Length: 189
Length: 189
DNA sequence: CTTGTCATTTGGCAATTGCCAAACGACACC
DNA sequence: GGTGTCGTTTGGCAATTGCCAAATGACAAG
Image (cartoon, rainbow over all chains, first blue to last red; front, side):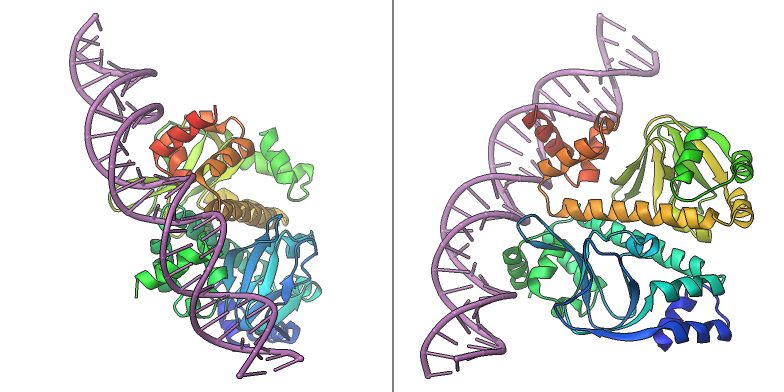
């Protein structure tokens, strides 16, 4: 909970009353490995702050293969933000790939905070654009690197994460086959 | 100018007085092919709505090669949004690849609109997250497609654009060499 | 018209990566 | 212990793409 407040304070100021209000609206939630926090076709009813565990934002093609767009891990927000904000159907899945603990805000709580705390919307606008811009740059950079460079960059940028996610999901994030990732790992040891 | 207002109205409501205020703050500007709208290391002082022409958002590596992250063309906003919002140094270049006509808002005008029009920040928050999310998905999708598929998808998604941008810049957007793109074009005719 | 410059095309070859199939390892269940 | 399942590793081969170099084309300047 302190971590959540510290995270928010990076993006704007909040006084003690506002912090107390936020804390009163945050709700602890755990979800099991393999279950979905949010599903394509459904409307996102909550936004979560990850206190423990890893999720992946992913989609499936017409033959059921899953592709990882990115991972979300401790001390980051997770949600289909456009679905949550405008209450439109989501286009992606958010899947827990380990057991996860989250602090969540329901849409109603989020709206109340947005009405009570002037800085709230500005804080989330900043978080959203910073995070999305970074994700976009990461994908865009990967496009012009070879597979091994992408993997090494992932190792450096997300220390420890490579050992916590299945090889096949990491491979689809990197845009390569599981076999290729397995060979790359053998190469660089 | 009507196009700009119509674009904004897609993301929120504005009454006639607000529309008039917006129009009074928008400033016409032209920039020449080959010049920068915004530069890495500098603070973005304006946000532009493209009425004519094409720009690219790009960066350079340590040996001076330029890589295109994406293109911005008619009836879209262009800016380094994080630099513009927080007045921090930009990390990328925005280059006119044809002569361009823009409607621009200076940081001061933008702030005034933000103070006078309650919906203003919400409109730009939606535009920002929608646009960034689409860019991010596009890059992420490209990562798992072969070069020809990426090019065909670009042709379908941005009709006419392929003939208006230099092959070398399109190649770097697609993450392939100019030679490869040239061969792909020969293949599919 | 000639020249120079720069972007694009093309060829040949090498490296990367994908695809398919088989083997292996971990692990739960009987 | 045996069996099945699933994820990962490995091998062999084919396709894609990059790299380097040369040829061609477009175009502006003299």
